[in-house]
Length: 322
Image (tube, rainbow, N blue to C red):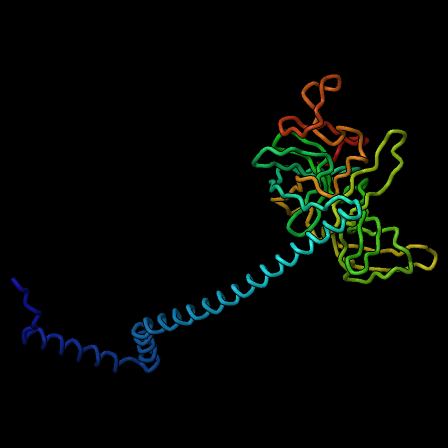
């Protein structure tokens, strides 16, 4: 059975007409300001769907333009990546022809910062990896902004302590990105300082400082070894101030670090051996995790993620600051 349409009766129409007359009379009796406010409210209610539709159409057009721009950027980055890969292959071929090792890129392992320790001789962070890591002594540790430090002591398959580059006893071989001028980066009050840079070298404020891949050679005694260097090209900081004292042979260079040493929740450990890993500088097995046999037991020299290496903690008078 078909339903009939609604047909208001005459009385209903009269009632609606009377209500409309009353509303009109009431609105006309209101002050001008109140009439304008009510009219604005009614206009907003009636025109809101139109404005929403207009905004939606504009948003769709903007999103389409942004998608087109992003696609163009992705295409440019893909072309650049292909070109970089070709340059890398050419560089590896030249290094091989010259009898040098290929410069491997290495891989990153994300870790969470779980503890901090500050002392007179060292500043350290404790990090935790979600997966087991074959920790190696002096593995570089970076943040998205730049270099943080290096692995100093493993606490297990998942955790390790890292030594920050702000530690008083740590020196990092660095270079100026623009000119290739070499120097030694050391902690300094109020930031970092780039030392051993000649007074006539070209260094200006704003220059970026990168790791040079060259270790600082120290007298380690008979049978000792030089400290492992960081890989070349890691961003470290930006030159904030340069001066050339008349009575000194070297410039005084102040560097602002790129990475924050107090506001890190996630850091990245460069886990894969690369061009910075120099076995010839260390005794056999010195940079691998000791085997379960102990000092007199069998040692394979292979990295083990289940047992940490032992690194003596630096001797400090008194109690370390927390």
